[in-house]
Amino acid sequence: MKLNDLAARSIKVVLAVSLVSSYSSALTIDEYIQLAKQKNPLLKSYEASVEASKVKAQSSELDLSPVLTAGYQTSTDQSRPSMMGTKRESQVYNLGVAKKFTTGTMLKVQAQSGQFDNSNVSLQGFDHYSTGALSISLQQSLWKDFLGEGTQLKIDRQRKTAELEQYSNELQARAVLFEIEANYLDYALAFEDYKLKKANLDRAQKIDKWTANRVENGISDRADLMNSKALLALREAQLISAEEELKSQESKLRDNLNISADEKTPDIQADLASERPYLNVLKKAKHVQKIESYLSSLESEVKSLVASETQDSLKPDLNVFGTYALTSYNRDYAQAMQDVTKTDYPQSAVGLNLTWMFETEAKQSIRKASLIEAQASRLKADKKKLDGQTAWEDLVRKYEVLKKTVTTLDKAAQYQRERAKAEQDKLSKGRTVTANVVLAETDAAEAEVTLLRTKSQLRKLEASSLLFMEVQE
Image (cartoon, rainbow, N blue to C red; front, side):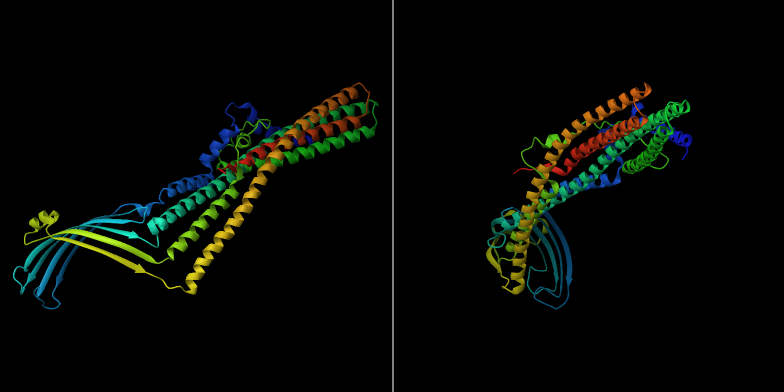
């Protein structure tokens, strides 16, 4: 590629990306993240899933919700003559409310009425009559789901499962958010690197032009000219590579913001020297773990609850129940309904029901498998917990080391800049050779690039703390 063509191409790129620093509307990293939350479909889907999981957690006590029952039945029976006549017609209505409590107690209140018409009855007074009943019944578990133990286990398991799903979606959302933020930093780095490479090329052009004049005037030899041209060619190649990296990172940034082809890439205002807040906030917490480790703990709790729930479900089912009802009877339907609250004709019943599944190999296998799964999950969670704590300690240590490294590299870059400037000044006075200037320019450029990349790594390290969370010990 010719120098003029490269310069023209570079000007276009500079014009395209220089708006990053010149427009007052350029996006800061926080504004960029908010825009990504609004426009990135993947991130929006995970955040919606998190909200759905929170709502699902509120449904764990669904079995304890009151249930309304209502029914109507009309029938005609001409199957076989009986004392109630040759044709028997009836209309029956019922309305009730049932409620289960955390103690395993089932309470049911029900009202029922019926109208009966019989043809050719043999018993006087039974050709037409109406009945009513108002009953209350209680049922209490005494073995399986003893005093609501199984009910509470189910509620706890559903809550933990919803919490596990919530944090699983939260982890995926944060992972996407980390990638989005990392891309912003990569784009900022690519832009700064491009500007640096462009400045390096400009200096190389000046050195080449200055050396060419000295050779033409007989002050320098041809070796100096070849050295400066080699430097110029190297700077051209570096600029081409930087330009390609800038375009690649821009493409990722557009994808993150779900920008269509006809939309302009938003300008950004990045400052690689500014800290991201996540890690420093977590450093104030007493206990920090990777979200992945916390998920393992939740999964272990769910498996433990499942095991307990399985053990309870295999117990014999022993229930005690009692029913008390007020009844009424009259030929007139309205009068029967008025008399339903009278205590003249009560009904009561108390009983006990037992259901026992025999011990079989299948039953024992289910019980044993649930316990083994719970134990395996607990061992896995313990290991993940230790790994998560170690990962956090490693992150904090690397962060502190990298902060010191950035400070050191900043000084080194400053020294290299001063050295390159001093070598250029010496060259203009004829006190050094071009090779020294080229070496100083190269070292200064490499020091700048290394500093930029290390700053970007530091910001990414801060952003990676999104994958950690504070936990209660």
